[in-house]
Image 1 (cartoon, chains in turn purple, blue):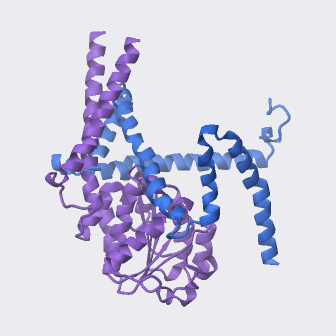
Image 2 (tube, each protein chain N blue to C red; image 1 turned 90 degrees about the vertical axis):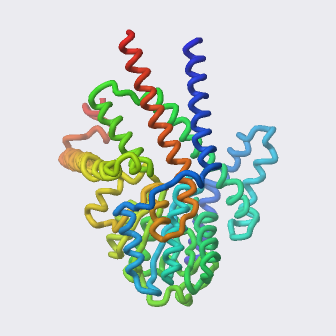
Image 3 (cartoon, one colour; image 1 turned 180 degrees about the horizontal axis):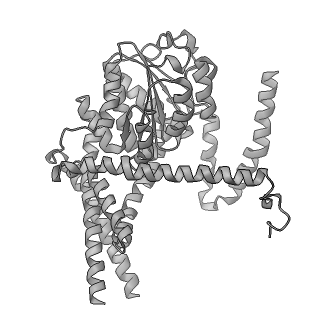
Length: 274
Length: 167
């Protein structure tokens, strides 16, 4: 009984500490400094977009649902801001069903409004099609077989944004931002068939999975987690949600490290006593 | 002809999957949640187009609900890390140190403490993790080939459901 009580008390103390570690940095966000640096893998994506000529078509695959929205939305926002600033043509699509309705359309419309870009001319959003890998194989041969119409049912071939695009091979840069297996699907079926340069964005815990693909050159660059999104915001000189969210994340990480150290001290003291 | 095939496939899918699920769902919903079950029909009426009521629900209800559920993991990870992450052996200590370096490397604090922490994190990702990952994938591939050969040559017959191997 005492052991159970102690377990519950410790658990609630930890929960309270974590809650405070999130709430306080959110309130005093402006007083916490963050260094303006970026890692090589994030900068590679920035450099790739920076190297593209005005009007070049790029493709962004938004493959996550609201559960990873806080971590991955800042990446898409940063990429779109950068692309729109460079006057690139952007095609948005998804192979993740839960991203199809709100997430994809919402982010693109928000960024287009902010950057005064027009649907059908500067960007286009593709509807969700089930199949994942099959869709990528199809668009790597003929884009209009996979997507004859955009999400508003306009004929893709008639849209200005698709000028000169026949298949994935004509896309100058594609990036998949995903919270699941979509990056793997893009590497296997998109990159290998389309031969276009491919970048990836993923949650922090998934980043480890994609380092072998960076070494092999199958990925140009990688954005892993909110920290990478904040680095991208630094590179495009537009500090937004990723920077704000990094502050509570920094404090929570420090809190967890502290808890691990305290837990180990208690463990070793108990061991010595026994 | 294509339309006829598509239509038939659609009705087959409805009959095979959708209707039984709906019947089961109606049976399982508790009586005090009666009004909620009708919400499931909303997409059929409104669709998920931009500006539709369901689009609004997706942005203002579904998104915060899913984000909240996912965020709760953070609290349990902290509690579990405090209780279970112990340096009990050399292997556990190595894992613990790697985890600490990666956690620090992911946040600006790591860089503030020592410039080398983010570089060490990248080294952990690039060398030991990638090496181990490749070894595991290679092992899986070799195992799959070996097992396939056993099946092709009839050494492995357990999958047929009979014989000595099946016992």
